[in-house]
Image (cartoon, rainbow, N blue to C red; front, side):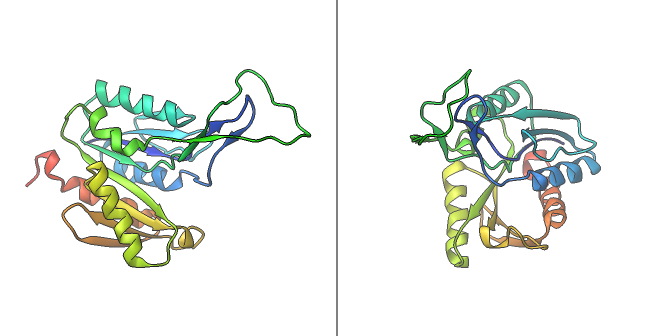
Length: 216
């Protein structure tokens, strides 16, 4: 099985030394990569700068911002046949509208930034794949204590992106020792996992049973 995994945070530049990012470490994506490789999969990891790097996999590539991740996904999916894409990267929802390249903005004064929304990369993955049959797994981070609202956010993402599964987790559990994940399936049904390793093994099992691999 050949799997492409994105992980870690994007960095949207402000100038040549400053950027806007988020708290993602990429450790969940790295754990998924390693679990897949341990079961014999050929794994490509696209990870953010300074994000966790999986051991024992076939290929690593590093992205910086939203645009570079989108471009790399497009090239890899156009050039190579993948059985699955697991899009775990924490992609910034906003980018600086007019970043300054090649120089450092002066400090000591007020700086006002205008941000523009970025496109949802998961919505573009099936187009990047050009109609190739693959299993698509996305991630949805929520900030809502209501389980029903969390589930709606996951199912809305499935409907919009064409994902087969969406892994939902909430800001409230990010710092917990047993980080809670809920896997939602396109056809209904959900599975609850505690911790990155349990999630990684659950996703490996789902992919090994996926019809896109020709397994009944």
